Length: 167
Image (tube, rainbow, N blue to C red):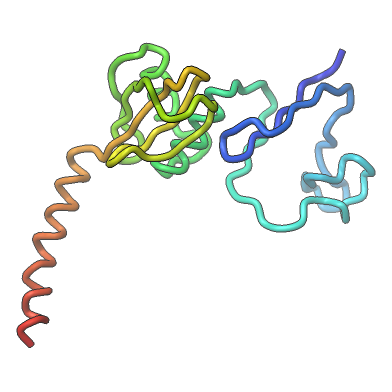
């Protein structure tokens, strides 16, 4: 019997393996975790290149949460542990209501254009995150206060643009 290790890339499950091996806690010389070096223990075989927004959890996270964390990070610009993630997941599990996350209002949605859990995209003025293999998930639109601020900014810029044209 072993542990399941899953690799998600951009919120979508890419690889899964069951193994009895453990992930070393850190490189004793630098006290840093090195991704990619567990096979031979040599730190020089670690991940080459840049990585952004990596989450390593010491407990099992399900595909729905991983997809929500990725999608909300992408569109609402929240971090991995933002409390609004639970609020949006509550809207999805209840299949009703709305939740605000990072300036967007998220609502339950059906018939999204993909059945791949973790898929994201936009439909007109709405962003979407697919959270099950039936094409259900959540969609987000800017909250009214954000739209009001945007409209106010445009109204303030119009006189400046008109002055430039006259000059």
